[in-house]
Length: 108
Image (tube, rainbow, N blue to C red; front, side, top):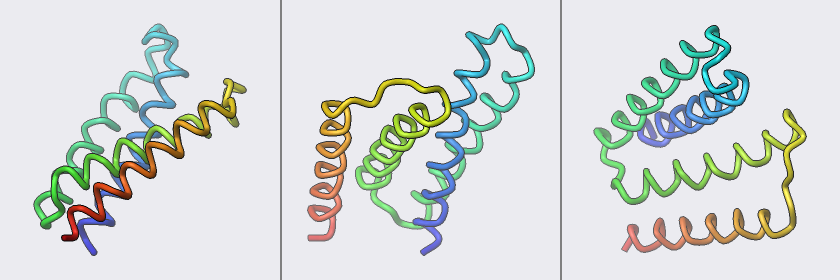
């Protein structure tokens, strides 16, 4: 349970950090540098906690990246009015199916 909670935290913090990159405008807006760098540090720390609690690396990284891609794309659409086409949505679904297969494979 701790592994999944740590991974969920890592995903949320990593997505927030990635969205902060948009606000930083290529690090020209200095106030966004700390949230971006601190967020990535926290995200990797939480990922390592999930691994330390027994989550397989392939499962943890697969879930982290898939959820991160999906949440970032959806939130970028909502917050920044960036495109989210049907083809992009199909790609997100394909990524999630792939992660589900990795998770099922790890269970056996």
